[in-house]
Length: 209
Image (cartoon, rainbow, N blue to C red; front, side, top):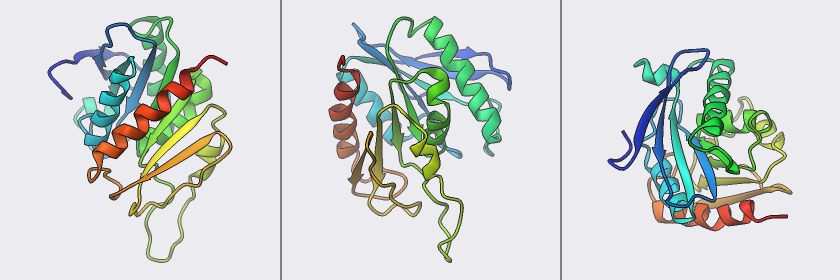
């Protein structure tokens, strides 16, 4: 459980129950839904830093644990299953705890990829990517490039990336800001800068046009 102030709920998905940890803002202006990395959980320090920043900005935050983690498995499910479970969870949150609120989605590493791939399907107003895994680290410098997943997001995107991240540094784009902070893929080195980047970006996403 991420903190003593969150409420845990299990939500059904096509691939088993997911867990949602709800951190409620007193008078929420929006909701933020965040997913974890492939081998980690919702207690990751950068996810908790983003949660703190969002709560300060008046957003209710939900940290989502994918069904494979709830079932006790460490190996991640295939991308299609992750996406389907995520969409099912977000739809239930839209009908429940986050009803009527603008929605920002995101996550760290694998969770950021899921949020990018599903942004249009869930109607995300913005996508927050913590340690986006641009390219798997390999000595020969080859490997699949995940930049198309970022490029496909029409909504505003914030990428917070460690300067020494072995997965590479995504480039900025017309609606994509990239903030480089000290550290590597874990983003543990400079959590204050992670929190500051998220806190500064969220209001710009939620400003009325």
